[in-house]
Length: 196
Image 1 (cartoon, rainbow, N blue to C red):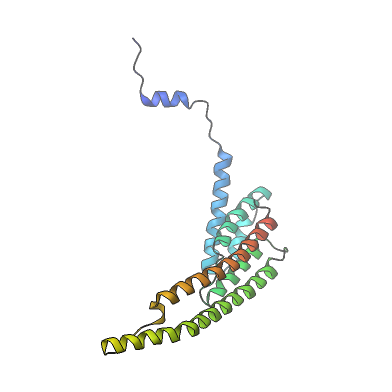
Image 2: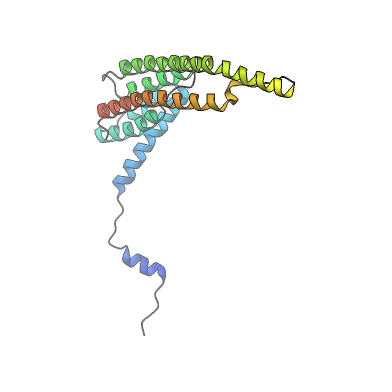
C-alpha cells in the first residue's frame, strides 16, 4: 500500500522546478517607488523628490521608475470641474516635464491648460444656453401648477427632467470631445517616455 503524503510534500514536489524571479520583483519595486514619488509630488508640488529618487540609478531603473510615476501622473489628468482644477493640470505638467526633461512637455501641458480652460468656457456657455432655453418652459409649468393648486410651488431648473436630460446629453458629448484630446496627450507622453 502506498504511503500517505502531506499536501505540503506534494506541493513542494510539483513546484521544485519553479525558481523565483528576483528581477521581476525588483522591477515591480522600482515602478512602485515611481508611483509613490508621483503621489508625493502631487501632494507637495516638489519635483526635487523625483530627482532624488533618480540619483545614482542606471538606465533600466530610471525607465522603470519613470514608467511608474508617469502612470500615476497620467491617471490624474482629467477634465476639470472648475477653474481651480486647472492648477492640478499645471502641476501634472511640471511633474511630467521633470521626468521627461528637454522633450517639450512643459509646452505641451501649457497647451493642455489652454484647451481645458476652453473646455470650461464651453461648458459654462452650454449650461447658460440650456438654461435660457428651458427656463421659460419651467416658468410655464410653475404658473400652471400655481393656477391648478392655488399656491406658488417653487421649482428649480435642475429638477426638470427635460432640462436634466438635455444637460446630461450635451455635457457628455462635450466631455467626449475633450477626453479625446486628453487621450492624445497621454499617448504623446507615453511615446516620448518610450512606454507602451
